[in-house]
Amino acid sequence: MIKITKIIFSVFTLVTFVSCTQYHSPDRETWPTYLRGASFTDMSDTARIAKKPVYQGTGGRTVAQVMPQSAKMEYGDKNTNDSNLYVKYMADLESKLYDELRKPGMSVQRAGTDVVILLVRDAIMELNAPDISEIGDETLGIISDILKKYDATFIEIAGYTDAMRDSNAAHSLSLDMAARAGVYFAQHGINTSRLFIVGRGAARPIAAQDEIGRLTNRRIEIRITPVR
Image (cartoon, rainbow, N blue to C red; front, side, top):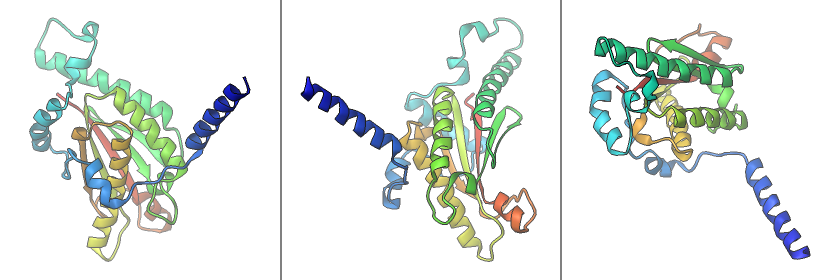
């Protein structure tokens, strides 16, 4: 009985230790292994069309294949019916994300049938180090879990910086943020054939380039689009 108690205590201690251990990104040299299958380009219409056979070759499905039969329409124009399926699927996804990401520095928005998650850098990464913070681990974990359920989607992870004198440095920093999030997703069960990873430097600022605005412009945007 004492031996069994010791075993149970040891297992409990191990589980507690693992659950309390803060996440750290793996060594940069290993990132290509984690991100094998991801595309390092904008998620354009052309890129998605080219990516679709690769995605399906890894077991990926379209929205029409994952939606319940009851949600499908047997009559009417096919394009209209398909569009309604995409809207419903993405509206459900948006609702799940919105409910879970009500935190400072985070927002969930609709852009047509796409859903965009905006994550200010300081809301998910260490303040003075290029690594994911404890809160960022929790947040990206929530997003990963939801995206695994809504897996008939492509995902673009785009990093942005505030205005910098050196555009090459800005691009490198923004790509580092995006790739770091991509590695996290890959480690947490996201099919990398769904991923598009880009660094856009100081392009597309969403706030003024003052002290507060710069903090907002340093961000990751995760754009999610249905696989048609």
